[in-house]
Image 1 (tube, rainbow, N blue to C red):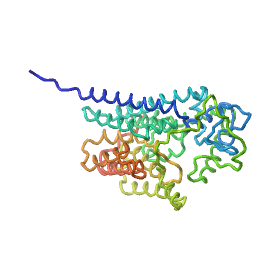
Image 2: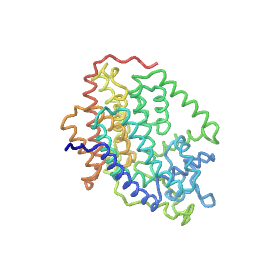
Image 3: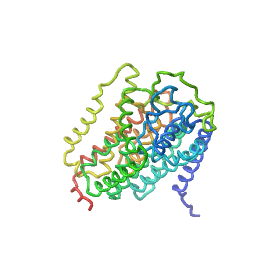
Image 4: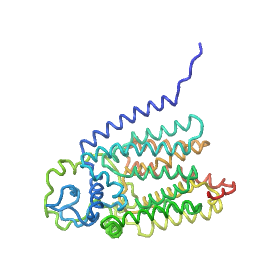
Length: 429
């Protein structure tokens, strides 16, 4: 009697569905119980940009509407906790229109939606026919959903999943030769976080007029939009000033106060008494610069940028014309690795929830390199084990996982660039 082979793809999707429901149940509990301390300043910032209030230099004081109060800001401080750009505040404005209780629940599901969209976009862009690609992508999704890093992201109410989605969309646009869309996405990333410009530097080698036009159109539209907002353009000047101040507050997550007893926050704000509460989840500082500073060693301010320039110069001198013949996705991966190294060396807080950045790069690595060596696969399994907490008592285990991923990415880039001998494709029209 003939036997039918099990549908492995269907089994994988069913298993992933169960993992997704378990993960969502955990995060729903965390969302309802805790205050979303990192979402609070972003919602307050969103409300401020709409109403013309300073996002950075006008913290709440008694007598003002509670919707602008952030109890994680020390009483008497002259700055808010908000460190995002005015563009990020504007994007979050729909959440600001809700009560914070509603915003927490909405943001829970938006985070899951953006993560799943990022995975789907990256998979569709690079998947080859065959079962292995589905297995690889499903494994990545499972590791993310089962990790403390993801639950920390959701419980705190962080926004890095937005950037994760944009990076995945950019990989997809480059793979499909949609250069106009790629230009738009590059600009959005920089508007969200100017340091993402480092990630985009290698793409300049394969710049097309469509990319430039997409970027220019987006910038023009944003300038016009912020000109219509009360103090919209002024907010960008204040952003520059605030980041200058924060750069001198190494390792701090809150602004300093000269009068910590100036007032006491109400027991409930917007009907919630838990806005200062968060889960005692173990998390690390993934910034090498900040870790060294905590040990009494401050890296010279020029050093992170010198390392970045050294990597780019080495790549240019060692691989030469191969960089001009490389695919745009490879150049984006090179830029992502350079940006990651820079952010690791800067003395700024960088916690586990930023691991979500790796979603699209790892999918690209796995799906487009079929002939992986045994050692390379072992390295990825080690990274997965570290992320899942197999050695959770090991100091900075997620930082170590990122270092393993960086090594694996540089190894693959080396192999590809050394063999990039095919003629350079003509720029897209």
